[in-house]
Amino acid sequence: MKNDSYRESRFDTAMLKKLRILVLVHATLVPPDSLDDSSEKEIAEWRTEYDVISHLKSAGHEIKTLGLSDNLSELRRAIIDWSPDIVFNLLEEFDGIVTYDQHVVAFLELMHQPYTGCNPRGMMLSRDKVLSKQLLSYHRIPTPQFTVFPRGKKLRISKKLQFPLFVKSSTEDASLGIAHASVVTDEKQLTERISFIHEQILSDALVEEYIEGRELYVGVIGNNRLKVLPVWEMTFGSLPENLPAIATRKVKWDRTYQQKYGITTAVAENLPDGTMARLEQLSKRIFRALHLTGYARMDFRLRNDGALYVLEANANPNLSAAEDFAQSAHSDGMNYAGVLHRILKLGQNYPAAWRALDA
Image (cartoon, rainbow, N blue to C red; front, side, top):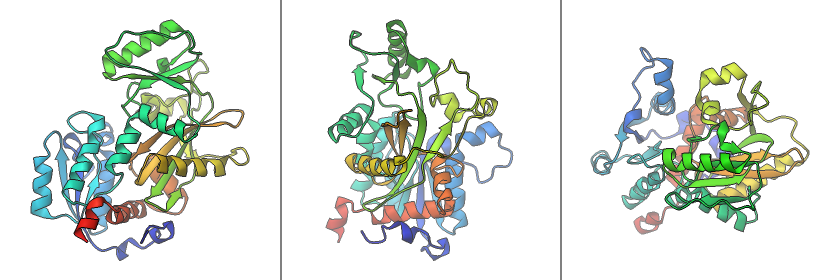
């Protein structure tokens, strides 16, 4: 596809045409123009939005930020009145529902509006963890065995389930609802955790075999021609041995907790022979099997015997300059501005169906 090779992403950002960019964020995450007078806790809430907007402004683009909650008329008005060249999509939900963000992207397509990140079909398939695992199983991509306990139905625990098991929401992301108690070792714990997901997270419960091993993340960027970024690893530092080494919400987002136990992420080292090539192959297969576009991150577990399992695929992962995706790209020679402009180019070139009609 034209301009869809990684080589072409290593350009001086000054060479990119200056664009009118509508940055789409959640209504509560519109960042201020400056970090001054903001606490560390406040900054953490809208860090990604601030990083993206401030870097795009620094590159000379004309930026308009739109905070969206539950009303698409504001988005329609901004597109009609302002005529942006592209929408930089940073939404992760709509009307408080994670799986509704795909409909916002579908609306952009109906408006014949170019946008960054994943297309509606890829978002729908990857956001639905049950459906995505079914698709991965169909394509013989290794993923933990699983079962689903629907919310609102009587709980029946099969005697065939083998512990330990991992319990999480079938739809939520960012580790919402994941804690050390998510790994269960008996039927009582399993029942309690399923009830927690049903009652507190308000979603179906996805229960899968717990894979003990190393936690690996692989970023992929592209539409047709894909570039796999260096493998990133989460290390759990001095986390107590009685706690499972999993990416809980505190492990992922609580800086104090991370510092206390020395939890870090960095380039994966000392991987078994052949693992890097296998991760690259699997990541590309997953990206295509789920019809992803733009950029995504695949989460894997590497068992002690060398077996790899994909835990999930994340369309439009966190784009903060200090987070895994951008840091992985940086370790491979692409600075943060380069990542953002690469994503912009992919959005401009994505062959949405409406383009054929407008040609």
